[in-house]
Structures are given as structure tokens and as C-alpha cells.
Length: 247
Image (cartoon, rainbow, N blue to C red; front, side, top):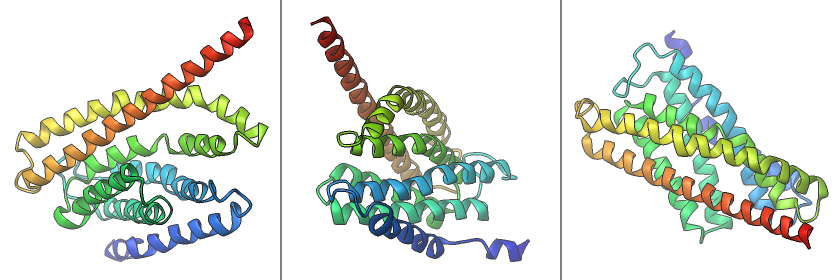
């Protein structure tokens, strides 16, 4: 068992993997795309490589955990899943710093997310149960969101992309709204109630718990605002279409 534990991939192995995927996307898969969308598409590809696999890895890490709970120690496999996500967010952060240095919202989001993952993984080695559940809630919409984003980027010049964008938008908005607007807040409430009760103070410092909660609450709030704006825009488009038909 010890041999298996030490053979698990680490951050130093995952980061080069995401770097290679990004470079293959930028110089290969999307080389003919407009320079305006090429970096974003490459970012979407590494997000696809991270999102859905991270969900299944996190579920497996939680199911096989012998000690479950918000204060349980991290298992080696849970730490591996955290390393997997840390590597992705580091790579995507570099992408934003190079191509979108003025996008303070996403850069701040990635830095805050890295803070939560890194402190859970390397500082306290406890709390992975809560962080991985949050990871599942954050990434379960990843495949749909990235496909929608790629379709949105090409909808103006590719009829197929436009049709895919129109087809995906309503179900994606519904799915995202349920996960971020209902499931996420419910879990964060349970998480906050446990940690703020002091039940984990002996393994996770209170200041760190509060920091995690602030990051998560802000992230969920921004997500809800983002999808709310998408709903508003969708209804506006549908209203314009109805008006054109009436005329």
C-alpha cells in the first residue's frame, strides 16, 4: 500500500501535462482560429481536460475515504486530486496573465482558488472532503460550459456553431443555475455551520476556515450574477425574435 501511495502522480507531473495540452491546442487544434479566440479556445481545452476528470476523481476520492467529514485528514489520493486541480489552475492563471492581464476578475478567482487548494493540500492536510465536494459542484458543469463557450466564439462565422450555441444555452443555464444557485449555497451553509462552530479548530485554524468561506461565498455570488445576466440576455434575444415575427 505504501508503494502505491508514493507512486501516485504529483503536482510536478500534472503541470507539464496541462502545459503540453495547452500548447497542442494553441499551436495545433486551434492554429487556424482567429488570434482573438485562439487563446480562449486553448484555455477551454485544458479546462475540458481538467473539469470532467476532476469530478470523477473527486467522487472516487470521497467514496473511498475511510474517515469522512469536514475535519477528516486528507487521504493520499485526495491530495493527488488537489494537485491535479492546482496544476490546472496554475496553467490557466499563466494563460490569463499572458493573454488577459487586465481580466482582474478571473485572475483574482484563480488566485483565490489556488489559495484554498494549496492551504488544504500543503498547510493543514485536512478538509479535503469539503474542498472536493466544492470541486465537484464547480466542475460538474465544465463540459457543457466549455462546449458552449467554444460555440459562442465561432457562432458568428460558423452556422453549426451558432446552432449548437442556441441548442446548448437554455439547458446549460438551467443546469448551471441549479448547481450554483441551489446545491452550492446549501452545501456552503452546512460547511460554514460546521467550521464556525469550532468543531475543526484543532486541525484547521479559524482564520483559514473563514478565508475559505469568504472565497467560496464570493465565487458562488459572482457565478449567480453571471448566469443571471445570461438569462436576461437570453430573454432579450427571444423578445427581439418575437417582435421581428410580429412585424
